[in-house]
Image 1 (tube, rainbow, N blue to C red):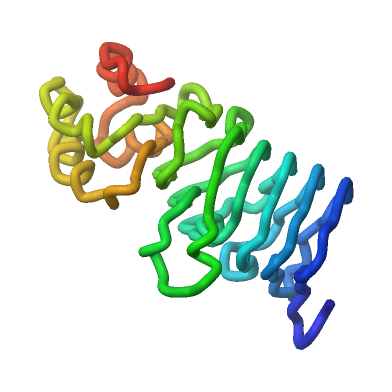
Image 2 (tube, one colour):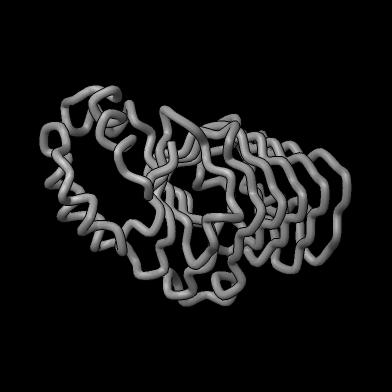
Length: 210
């Protein structure tokens, strides 16, 4: 359905189709009450052009061709067995109903998803079991239970001001945060060090995947 520049997929079940969300002049709305199974979604629009409202994605592939920055719409999606590729920055996945008092944010979930072909930076997993998720490998790294492990991480000698950032920032994440993924080159630029210096520290800690 296309109304006033909006392309909406709602109140239906779609299986084994390729959906290309690529028009620069459209706002794409997925949901409510939308179920996609074994579909490929090509996302080539900025965050402001994409809206997810209580949609279910089962065994789908997301090809993120335009970097999604600070996109929280995934919290209104139920994701199971999905695969991601492309760049995502500042995105949250899973169940965080306190994020916004809207009905579709009560239905967010994620399980058995694969991010190994994606680049995640400052992305969080909320109220989900990290054991069911395949995270991207180095130069990305993922801190498991970042709040619970913040005290232990502070004991390490980090390069530059990174130790201070860990001490001040990790405990401030929402209580539902179960994993936090960074992109090492971006983290290194932030604290004026190198990815190699960061890796030298995280390889000594069992609670970090890289």
